[in-house]
Length: 82
Image 1 (tube, rainbow, N blue to C red):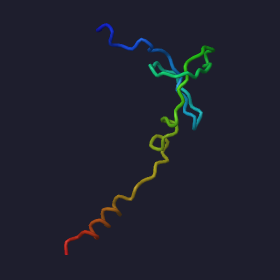
Image 2: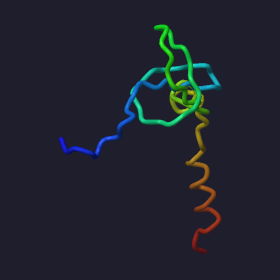
Image 3: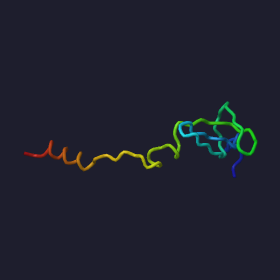
Image 4: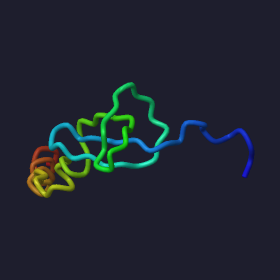
C-alpha cells in the first residue's frame, strides 16, 4: 500500500440513530467531540444520526407508494393531441 494516503485517525466510533435509539460500533474517521460508554465498558467517540436503516421508511416498510399509473393517465389526458 502507498504511504501517506490513508487517514491517521481510523478508529472505532459509535453511531447512534437518535430517532429510534439504535446504536452500532464501526471503524470510521468521523470527527466528533461527543463520547459514549459502549456495552464492552470502553469509551468511544459518538456520532449522532437523524436517520439510519432502522428508521428510514424504505428499510422499515412504511414507505408511501406513489400512484404513478394515475399520474401517467392524467398527463396523457391533459396533453393528448386533439
